[in-house]
Structures are given as C-alpha cells and as structure tokens.
Length: 348
Image 1 (cartoon, one colour):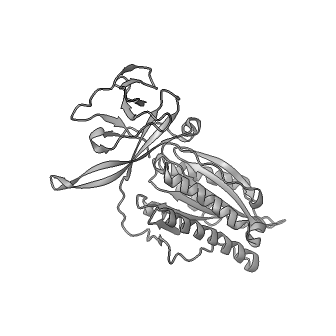
Image 2: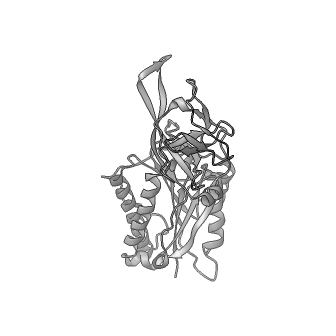
Image 3: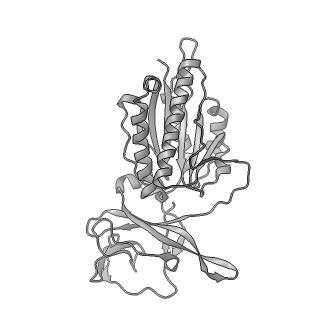
C-alpha cells in the first residue's frame, strides 16, 4: 500500500501563545475527524506533526490516520525555520519509502507549514538543501498566519504560499476546512488518477489569499512577548502584547508605537526550554507597554513585577511584597522611573 505522508510543520514560537495555538490544536482535531470519514484518505493518509520554535521536535511520527491523535502543542522561544526544515528533511529521509526497481515508494509528501513570524536563524543552507534535494520529492504549502511573515522568503521553498488574512475563530475554522478538503482531493486524485502532486481546494469565499511572493512585502513586528515566573508555583508564563499605532501621539512626524496587552498564559517549562534557542538580545521599554496582567499561575494581582537585582519578571499580590522567582531577592514593589525600564523581550 502506497502511503500519502502529510506533515504539519507548526510554528510554536512565543507569538503563537494564546488563541492562535488553541485554534491550531482545535483545527487539527477537526481535520483528523473529517479525514477519518473519507474512505480515500483513510486508505492512504499517514500524519506527522513537527513543532518548531528555536529548535524543532517531532510530536508525532508518521502514523496511520485511524491511529493518529493530534498532540498538545507546546510553546518555545525563537522561530528557527532553517532548523525546522532540516529536521523535516531528515525525517523524510528516514520515514518516507522511496521508489526502487523492486517496489513503488510512498506518494509525494505534503507539508503544511504554519507560521506567524519571521525566522530567527539563518535559513540559507537549509533552503539550498531543500531546493537541490527535496523540492521535487515533496510539496510545501506555506501558510502565513496574519501579515507579519516574510512571504518572499517562503517563496524560495514553496510555490504555494498563502496568507490567512483574518485570525478570528470563523476564519480559522474555514481555513482548516480548506486544509481538510485539500488533503481529500489529493488522496482522491492519487487513488483514481495516480497524479502524484498536491491538489489544493479552491480558496474563494474564505479569508485565505494566494501570495505573490515576488511582490515587495512589508515586514514588521506585531508582538512583544515577555517571560515571567511565578514564585508561588515556580511555573513560567508568557505575557503577550500586540503592536498598535497610537494615532493621537506624533513625534517627529511618526506615530508612536506601543504594545497593548493581549493576555498572560502559563506554559510548560520543560517543553519551552527544549524548543527554545536562548534568550534574545532585544529589549522593550515598559513605557511602550499598555496594560499589566494578573499572574495566570496563581492569580496574583501584579503579573509584571521586575526584579531590581536580576531584571527578570515575577508576580506579586496586592500587598506589594514580592519575591523574585529567579534569584530569590525579596522586596517591596516601588514605582518605576518615569523614563521606564528596559526589559528583555522573547524571541517571538
């Protein structure tokens, strides 16, 4: 039996924390449920999930559709697309059966790449390896979640680059229906016609657009993500801020940029460390942040308390007494200098 390998290469960087990662998890469950009801897909499709942030990790090896269960997606720091692509190529070499004189191998794999940011590593070597050895053997369908992705860069490894223009629940649901339909139509064309290529479903009527990767694109940073640790539970959490332009304030003819709080989210420390490639060297000033979260781990009122000794973030209750979860320094919350404090951002 010739298999149709379907890989989900999922960006689990810090900027995906919150609703985006939940929507991807829900969407993958829907995809598998729908595919199991399709006889062509059930006969041919094998599924694998690879998560990547600063590093890449297989969450599920290629698994027969009826035995596959969508994994919980972790969160990590960084967006190392080059490392992710190398990890994927290594897996294809090991897991996908090649055609030989004695046997027909697997059908050409389909890779659905989901990302909402730009690479934090050097992709040149991985892209060259893909284009010279894998591009004819597999199909990448690259999906930009939002408009913060360098789609020109994705166009170097994929002829199918699309952008999900809206990230509300309805748009995500329609998008994952499109992914499901694309896998179904491909499995049908393989079974009935033997056409070994991806057969994408129409995108009309949904918030998904084909990207002209040769057209100039504006790349910007839409999120600032901060890492904190709760001293009461010793668990880490992320605070996510979304960029906005403050039209009411203009300095030297430029709109002032600030970041508004989206939410705070407890994360799995072991998985985060495993998928992260170190701290960033980029700071953001507290004056550019609007809103302060409560601690998502213990419920303390102040979730963004900066330690004067180590500069790391912990939480504190409304008494103002606090203990740094990183270095153990104890003290009392005091007002921040009017010029603000620079704190280290996540790699996003």
